[in-house]
Image (cartoon, rainbow, N blue to C red):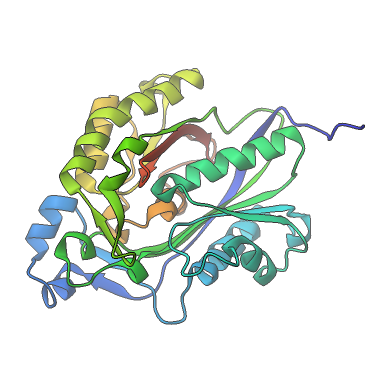
Length: 317
């Protein structure tokens, strides 16, 4: 039996993004529920978010972001042999999103599957893609985080409707002589899974204080271990890009991490919490604004329902 051609490492060669055009401000939400711009910004740090229109779906947003990533990478759709979509907001369990996305992008007969690790989904998917590339199971992998959380929000519940939003972010993962995707540190805390769940099987609900305590006091150790496995210290990273759950959480983890010189992603302010899409969205937008020069070393940290988490170091293209 002949072994497949392996690679020393994997790298991300391009990112892509998609955000719906519909901007919903805190003032817009205050017209519906008992809240205010000051209340929302003081608790979660969000000023506005993008909400999908009737023609936007998990699949259509994923295809839009994925198409941009492919175009930016110069990779022909015919050369993509694996598509992974991280999502927890598909309306239907069958069919999966990945195969439909591949068809829309003209990718012929790839491996295609979805990953549901909630807000940690993109980090999980990147690690799976990296392993596939390094072991020779795939050459070019399209990884996408896409979420339409607005379908699962109770718009009369001010504790959740002010947080969640829609969008998609994508990355193309290919082989590399020098590894540019570091070792992952991932895990779960299933005994606390009931802190984030679907209420009445249709509305997102979370125990906000419990989630805040967990994220702000425990996850810095996960991030530090990812740095350690990559042979780096906090002072050596260019940027810290955690899941954009809540600005207070982002800043609390960054402070405990001690990466004072690093650029801290604060995409949450204008994009809201887009679950598995938040890390690739933030990275794509930061690169687009010139905040992350090519070769920058970035620490990512995803965390969310499950409770699941994953951290790894990446070099941006």
